[in-house]
Each structure stands twice: as C-alpha cells, then as structure tokens.
Image (cartoon, rainbow over all chains, first blue to last red; front, side, top):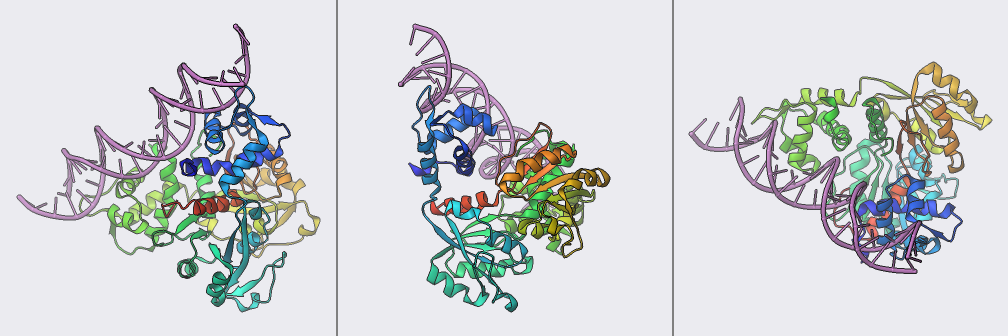
Length: 211
Length: 211
DNA sequence: TAGATTGTTAATCGATTAACAATC
DNA sequence: TAGATTGTTAATCGATTAACAATC
C-alpha cells in the first residue's frame, strides 16, 4: 500500500506539509490547497488520496489527519543519522542549518582532511574529525546517509570511502557525476548546474513561470 | 530551431559538457557517452542531434564541434549578472563559489540588512551592501537574476523587492513557496526538501540507484 | 433536493526507449 | 560489401489533466 506513492507525489509532500502547518482551519479542501500552491486541483486530490484517502465530499480533508499522514509517509518520526565530508563554506552552512531536523535527518558530524579544522566546532557544537576516523564513526553511530561537499578532485574518492563505510544514500553537492555500485542511492545537488539551467531558460524566454 | 530543445535535454547539457571536456579523442560516439554516464544510448543520440546534428555514421561526433554547440545552446558566452540577497553562511558559500562563471553567470554583489556586514568583503573581494541600495544597484548594473538566501520570514518580501527591481529570474534557496507574478521565472532550490526526499526514498528502499 | 467536493476512469502530454532504415 | 553508428518513426511509460460518477 505504501509503495504505490509515486516519486512525483513524494517530492510534493513537504510543500503540502509546509502549507498545512500555516493554516488554522479544521478542514481543508483540495481546491483550497491547489489555489494556494498554484497546482492542478486533480493532482492535489490524487496526492491527498494517495497518502491518506480520507477526504469527505463537501468538506475536504481533516487538516490534522492530513498532516499526520504526510509526516508518516515521509517517515519524519524515524530519525536517520548522516555525516558530512568537507567542512568548507558550503559544508559549514549545511552543518549549521536547522531545517533538516524537521524531516528527521540529523547531520551528526563533519570530516575534513585539513588538520587546522579538527579542533574547531560549528556554531551548534557539532565537531569536525579527521577523515581517517570516518569508518569508525559510521560504524559506531549507525550512519546511513553521507553528504559530499568537497572539491571536485576528491568527490569520487570520498564517495568510495562512504560506500566502504556501509552508507546507503549519498547527497552529492559536488559537480562530479559519481560512479556508484548498484543498490546505493544518489541524489545529485549540483548548484552550478541549477543556476546555469535557470539562466539558460531565462535567455530562451521560457513561457512557464514555475518549474 | 533553437526552441525545439526540451527542458529535459537542456538540463543534461552541462553534464555532457563536463564529460566531453575530460576526453581527449577527436571523435566520440553516442554509445561511448551513454556508457560513461550510464544513460540510455538513444536518449544521448537524440540530445546530441538536437544541439548539433552533425554526427557521422560509423565515427560519431567531432568532440570539439559538440562542445561548441553545447556551449552555444547554453549561452555560456553571453554573460548574465546576478545579485544575492542574504549574506549568511549559505549566501557566503555561494558568493565565493567559482563554478558559476563557467556557465556565464556572475554574482556581482550581496545585500544584507545587518549593518555589521556592510564593511565586510568576501574572499574574492565582492561587496555586501545595505538592502536599501538594491534597486539603484540593479538599475546601474543590468541585473537580471536575483538569488534569495534569507530566512523564511523575509523571503517573500525580498522576492517582491527583486521584482520591483526588474529582475527576470529568481533562484530561491529558501524553503518558502514564493508568490510570483506571470512572466517571472523561479527555480526553487530547497535543500531541506532535497535531503528529506533522499531520506524518504532510502527508507522506502527504492530500487533505482540514480535519480 | 441541490451543491460542493471527493475519487475514479479515460485522455493527453512529455520524455524515454525500442525497432529499424539510412549512411558512410 | 559488411559493419558500426546515426537519425527517425513508433511504442511505451509515468505523470498530469479532463470528464464524470459517487457521496455527503
């Protein structure tokens, strides 16, 4: 039953959640949600139906119920531990970002090969360790997600080490296309590519105003 | 002719480019590219055909030619100026990131409402101005892209100001769904959402290993 | 009952993949 | 000529949208 939810729907759930949090009504209809997010009405209804399926004709969905179902589908209550490799500017920004915990991801520590950083701490007290301690740390702390925020030249090396540490999912913030064995999940977050895409679409005068 | 290139294809071009740069052969075939990137062979061929259309049976594509065509399609040679609003950790990381210039985007300055930052400079010498100067700066420097890296509470306000400054495309790094008038391009880069999506897919044991 | 809203079935759309003819 | 590779046409797939019956 849980496996019938499409990736497209899963990707929209946090946006619904954010919107629902800000509402104060008891019931909310797919029409209202669609209008606020500027999404198709039927699509919203299908999404809602996929996660909770308890809408009432003429009334809509019990907001509380909807939120619980979304949280449940996203697995927000199940906390997952992650580590960051690379404590540069971007790595630091993400280590200190508070938004991840809302979705049940805890980035516990960072690793870097610059000895000067090993004594530093982030604003929230999280620590930076030598990269050599990665395997030991992952084993002891049940780390499932690895985040790559290192220069291009090191990305594949770090990736291989993470897989060796039994990490199951990688969030790749470098611009490198990683070579990954079957069974490991990768999400590429290439910021240069993303901004470049926006620029190209702008120059080509794309007509749609959201994507 | 240029308008027939799909968004899906446009999004893949930088990855092709990155790969082609690293090769040293004169000719390269779609088969080789597909194998290296682990993408479908026909899809690669269609992409190549869309941007340059000068493949030779039995030989493949002239690498130089292909690269020029991709650069051309992406409009890399046409430099576009951008500004950042928000000079926190994330804003700073992006201001100092060198990768954007490769695609012809120049983030010229940052704006922040914290007076303490107005005297600071980024590592590359770029400056931080009071937010009040935004409109004047945009007008004088032909700014077309605005980047939002401010706390949630300010995102919509900043967005409205940018539109007032005649900015045509917005890269939104905040977690807020922006309310935007017709004709303005927005790309949402919600990092919390992205990592949360990776986590959810991991927990649901997705079988595909790249997305 | 009438009307608003849900949920479902069919149609459409965009993108990828399969099959295959064209070409050097 | 044979074979590798391109380029095109048709089939497939996933997701969105349209149409409409079911429900309170």
